[in-house]
Image (tube, rainbow, N blue to C red; front, top):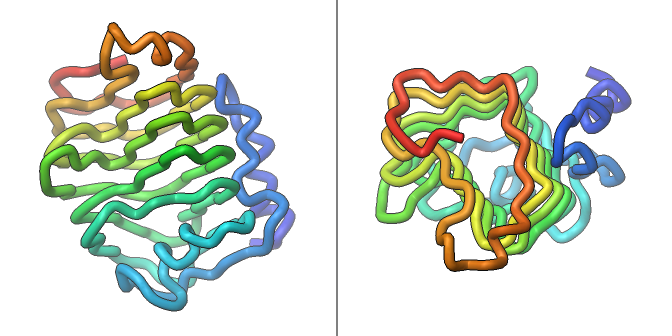
Length: 194
């Protein structure tokens, strides 16, 4: 896929997260390792401070030993490969302009372990065409003044606490949360639906 075809994805966002640019203005980073950390790993790419468009040269499962913190101005683009994250999930903490697409999340273990955790004060986020199932807590949690977020075309399956949007009715900062959820499939999920 050409560079321009990759980056055309950013123009397709809809809803409150439509202004998410991700790593549109940065170089392409090629994930060449399924290791949890080290050169060529997804964790190595996500911790870098500069904008990056992250793509995968490999397919397979990445076993995360701890939350993978995603910094601002990143696109994690799983198109063309099959990438599954397991063990822990992604944490978007005080970051902005993040795009996550075409990833699988399954089998997150531990207290308060979510597939994707968005808190606090994160904004301009787009999560598209991801598959999430079987985490010990939620699949996607959006709390603590995180806003301007779109969740689109995702598959949520066989799970109890599916999605949390705003954690505490007394937390006045959560009143500003703006989230669009569209064309998602909730398959055998039990509670915390939008």
